[in-house]
Amino acid sequence: MTIEEWAERIQAGDPRNIARAITAIESGDPASIPLLKLVFRSGRRAAVVGITGAPGAGKSTLVERLAASYRATGLRTSILAVDPTSSFTGGAILGDRVRMQRLATDTGVYIRSMATRGHWGGLASATYDAVTVLEAAGSDVVLIETVGVGQGEIEVARLAGAAVLLLVPGMGDEVQTFKAGVMEIADIFVINKSDRGGANRLEHDITSMLSVSPRQDGWQPPVVKTVSTTGEGIDALRHALDGFQSFCARTPLGKSREREKWRERLLDMARRDLFARVAGPLLGDGWVDEVVAEVMARRTDPYSAVEEMVKKGLESRG
Image (cartoon, rainbow, N blue to C red; front, side):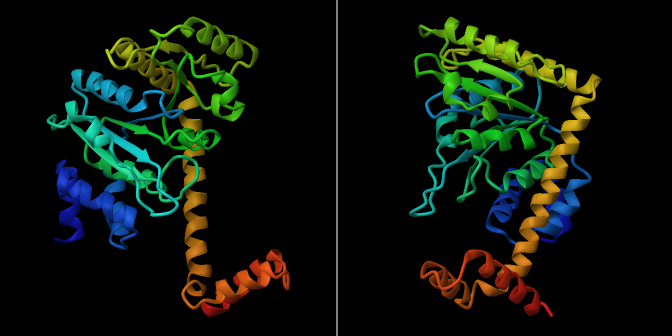
């Protein structure tokens, strides 16, 4: 199958070829680059929603319910569930397709688990490109469920058109647990498991924090209470997301966020490409391990080592 035929099947919404494309992206298959070039310009713009929160906040159940709510309105919906990768085995849990069985028979929903592969910030480095594929396949909404590792979740805001932060009453001082940088990425706050005691107090804490530090872009993040196990509040969350999308469309916020997203994305791609070009030739011959040993023995310093690495990398390219 040619790249053109592959792209056509993706654009037709064929799940097998969508899966093949995302697998190629994750594995670094060189064929993924011409494919992405081909499908990028033809893809529609999907509403990308990043959903983050601490482990145990109920993200997977909420994502499943939210996807069902979008489907009830006729929108094609995709879910990217980013799971942590073991630093020992390189494996990942990738269990979200098992947990989201109620959506498994809906052909208008595509679910994909992805591994962080050691990438800090909660998002797999391939997630950006996976969204491109899903947009080309006709997704109207892409829901990204992140690992929930804390302050690194700021990366969610760089990709997502809307960032949702889940908090749960009774899990300690949630507002203090999530540092200021994480609280600031939230376009919508969700108090999940709000049938527990302490939900009203948590809502008061969030609104008090927002009143003290209002956003400069004019958006006032709403606080939505949900019970994802029963579906309570899910439609209210979808309406809140629609409201934020409308706000972005009629104010400069939407364009400015998209501009910043692509600026960060292009710089990140350039950094990775330059690293591969400069350091790649040095990684296979053991030279880096020798330099590591020199630094450990303090016979050289890491700054000089990096200067030498860059010099040798450039020399190897002529």
